[in-house]
Image (cartoon, rainbow, N blue to C red; front, side, top):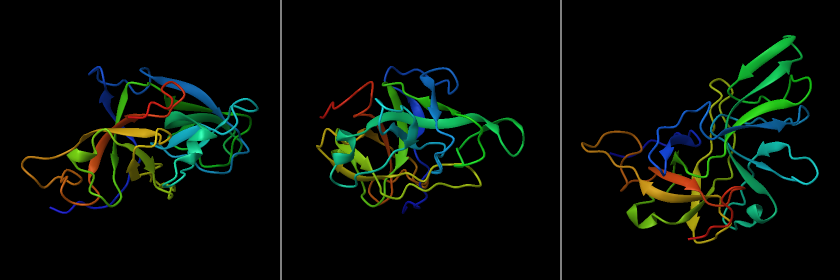
Length: 208
């Protein structure tokens, strides 16, 4: 069965030690987004700090496509799980699963999975990435827009290789028996893979 292309970002699957993730406690760390950051950040997006020595504010991860050069000048922090901020329009504190890029008075508190042992499910664009891809490092695609209705990420995996600066590493490929579940056909394009952090503030430049 052909897989349907419908990217959803990075969804936590578990951890390398086998524990079931608790999304609000295990490995979830509060960070800050500047109220002046007009770029939306969606649930399941990779996030980074572009200038940690001067600001430390989170931004949506910017892909370097096939070069991997982006990660040499920025720091991948983790996967965005939502935020809390004082809404200028509603005049109260609100919780949101994505940062819309506006409507905050003061800094935005962001919740991010930074657990270096976390495992995430993500969709491939093209491919397929099959079992021979296990151990490869991967970069996300250049399209990083999400869904402003659901708040879900639109990030996906696009490039695989040996560059240690790529942000994530494939550790397994999902398959289904019997077949018929979307993303679980590793012989067809746009399949699902499991990845962990490769170049991240708590797990930097591991390579393969």
